[in-house]
Length: 271
Image (cartoon, rainbow, N blue to C red; front, side, top):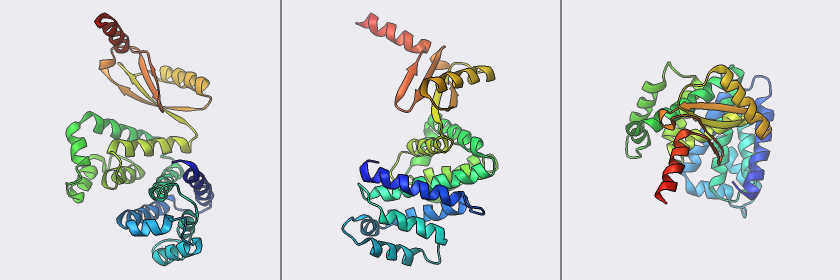
């Protein structure tokens, strides 16, 4: 997001944070309600345009939201969505994208309250790796022509009774309502949001052999010193790296693997 959309999202996140911090607030319920709002917006482009057009009166937008949601969502959710439509958005789809972030953050907050935040982040990462390593599975989950129920059943078979309920919610969302995103991108977004809630960077680490606990601790400490904030390690064992370590943090890649050095030698020989 750019410009006004980024500012509007930041303001909405502050409002959501205050709401989630209130006693008795059910983050999972708020997330479900917001996901429902997104589905309505995605299914009705004319409604989305009406709620994001800066030339439309803000009070009229709020009245429309209240008419749509009264009796279907809590007062807190209606107020949150009302603030979203009062805000300015650089692109029409940014409002729904922002609501998707807020919905996912609400689900993640529910996981935090239940003491499952680390588990959910790890399970999302493991599922992303599973899909990445199995092209047939990736095609089955991403096939837009496949019946929604068949993909839902596949997700249930893969995760039911094995993953936290919040993990299942977010994976189902990424698979069934990807909002035009590639499945891997949707999962990656939810993983990043999970890390951001704990004010951490996410480091995707590739090594040839599993890291021992003390090695993980030393690596996390070194990256914290380098970047100035805590770093969540998602470690992927890949024999193809041969040795050393490859680290991706955002758009930055730190590659010290043997395979990378061999590739450099091959390029020099070929030249």
